[in-house]
Length: 222
Length: 377
Image 1 (cartoon, chains in turn blue, yellow):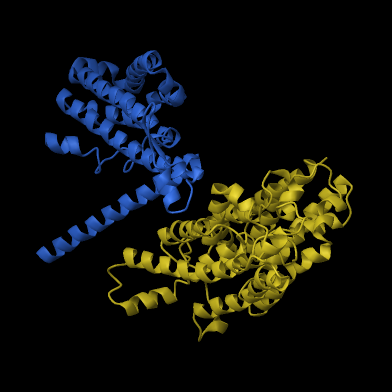
Image 2 (cartoon, rainbow over the protein chains, first blue to last red):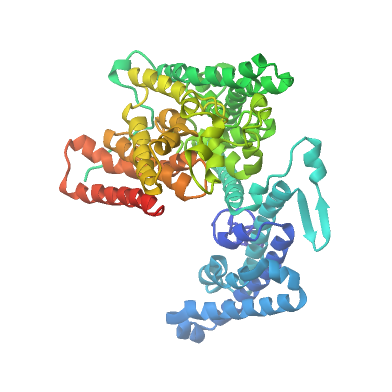
């Protein structure tokens, strides 16, 4: 796998949320506004890249790897938890409002399956450079996913798009123009499941179509 | 244990040998006609006879009744076209697919269980959710897990609860002072002291509940019309006659005991089975061939659980209605019930290793039944 493929895989092909369905809990809970999703993305990207870097550094030394082999999950968790604590404290100090609205879900990045999964499946087996690229790719892929969900949910549920702080795009006029009102259902968790499910269905449909096409191409080639 | 494969519902009996599933659906339409006709009479003709000034408002339910099935059918055609592009090459193929898809029913059922004056876009959105999410995404007719109409109706109830509860009154009922602005059940759920006068007298007598001249969704108000439809459908063997009977009987028994605990007379259970969508749900929705269990025993289990769940949601929980919610809840368990009962159906007897399942079912059923009663002590 070359570097470009490694970078691009996180967006669609191996997207952590849409394809691997990891980390769905925060994705469903905090995507009520774009601002939350952006904050979560930043925190997540930071943790993802640094944890991948540190873990691949540890694993690149053979002695160290053998040493931690029996307790590696615990070691990974400690590393990730320290990084999450750093993010949490930074956010509490500099972005207190965002910290309040994200609440417990910052700390929950620790047990987010993607971070641990990439550490176990990728970072511990690959070089530092590749792991950093993988971390960026996965982090951006996850951000991409939650930003899409939050855009849909906030637009349909509230009629607004909160970009950051007071910078709010009010699209209620669009709703009144066609004679309807926003549907608060989409800001509830049931609405989150529905949006995620529909996106998953669309992605799966596109994938199936591609597979069929490649099968047909193979048949024709034969 | 051996494995038995179940093909997708509905099933034809040998008696229908020369017919197709279309026969079932035509029968269902005939069975629905009493409630449809009555709802047109109650919400369109009657206000016009009474000389309402709001003629457009009076004709509105008729408009929704006509548009919804057509809209639902168009949606189905669109979904089929997108999903099965390869198989559908001409317009004729599409018609053939539509003939076996019965796309009008989700739309028709949703409009029948919706309030008469519901806003048009809310209705269309709910039909879209019911038809597309509840039915076509699962693979179309026969493949869906949940009753598509109830998916749409549940979406409407949870997404637009205030809009729904404020549009139950038709144009004639809006002019009457006696009605507080909602259905008997919504009013009932807010009562502090339950007496016959408080619960029923506002809306006339229990006979009015039976005939259906109380506010409510389009088709659900008239118990009489539902019973006429029930008799026709049972005679034609489109539905299993046991399911509505057991469902309503369970609700009656359970509320009878609750009524005794509360010191109420026989009116209490009668009010509970006549009001709201219980009759309509029991006859037309709990018996839906695709999503309900397929064996005799399974259907009986399903109907009993529906009864206690309806009482649980309606009287113990804080949902005023509870029929749609309980049906959608039991749809989840259809697969389990089918898997459990199908061995018994094939073997024809109760095996030793099948006894625990029956015991578990009875424990859950009796537990809920008693819990409903105890929570009123």
